[in-house]
View 1 (cartoon, rainbow, N blue to C red):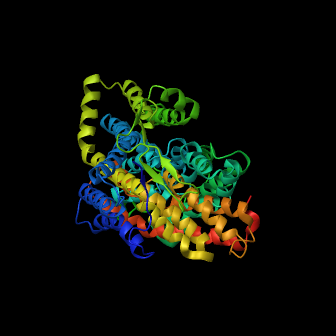
View 2 (view 1 turned 180 degrees about the horizontal axis):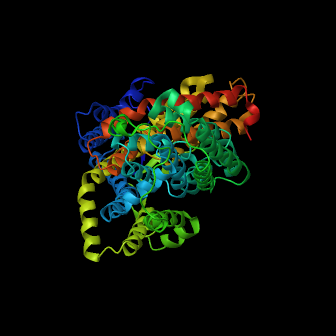
View 3 (view 1 turned 90 degrees about the horizontal axis):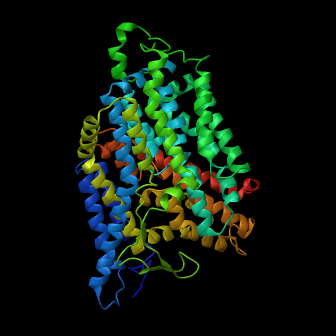
Length: 568
């Protein structure tokens, strides 16, 4: 038996999307309200998704409805397993490495070394959240940059909420090229379009936002005046990243865009700070009160440690960077992945079929869980932790004790991540996500705007730009065919250019949804070791996410109707 998805279970273009939105609205509503813990909100969202799937999306003619209910549970189990490995394992390993450095006192040295570049919190956020976070996104993706950047910022003295919110906000522009270009490569596979053309199109959209996001980040922290005070640093940081991002995406491809751009931005800003510092040192209100007796404060914080001590303290983070980069290389990942068993998910593999208009032809869905115990990025981070323990002279007994303590601290965040992915996979395999996506395709001439918003929705639902592209990439090209046909609003572009523009918009619009997807919010809360703060984090970033997504949609509209020469 095969479950062929239905996309309008209530026979209404209004009520069916509202029905499909119930699990997501319930989840985000409970998180934002602060009246339910993240694990309870996630569990409630999952129960709602499973109930909607069984009552409204399950094939009505099925003789054995119990078997289809088992299929729904199998989809949830598949999602939960994916939530724990690779995603949960990344977060656990990153927090373990961070805890090791705190336990041994080395993070205090790291914190002072960052402050020695500049005591200004605005500059520190640009260095850690934007430049270094973009590098980690380019090398690994899948929540790694949020986990590492948020932990680093909190350790450097940022308040937990600011550390999490700013790390999420900064992790936007790089996402489409994350994990060595995986989202663009996936988009090319599902649409049949040229990988190089999609990369070039994204490279003509995202650099504009790579200039905006650093300024936006500082504005959120310090207001308009505080942003103007550091405009030279913003120009160096964002300008370097945007320029390199444009050049690599257009003339090389999607694979190393963020790795090279992130490193270039980090180095350029660090060098610039040797000759320039902001006139006024910005710190948060509670810090200003603490330091008030010291006057204005120094433009740089002097370090109490020698260069040798600082270099030694940074070794664990250097090892993390090296392992994350090496583990992300396709050749290494493929070689390590040969030991990973591939499991056909019982009651789900080849039992669900997507149908028109989401795909061009009816296609049966695979459900293959790859147990990437060695090739997962989290394993690379764990190996970095092992070598760091040797470097920091941590005894085996202390190593085990710190790891066990970290596991206990992370048990509820990991449970929450598993529930979040259970929701995502349940909505995907039942067809609820496609119901929401199809609602956007009814917007006619405004669709280029909503193509980006569809990507935003896809990432908010799945937690991944890669997954969103796999989910909605084909739907974007089908819609492009319809809109570019004779008499359509995009007929002036032709089918080929319309497909490239709208498919890419799915990925570039999706990056703005990364900061509000439930998975990333839970990862951020876990990284700052503040379980229960998911609601405040969501409220901190939601409006920024929505406004940036609308701006991306406006850019796509401009490219569709005015700036058509920008389409490669």
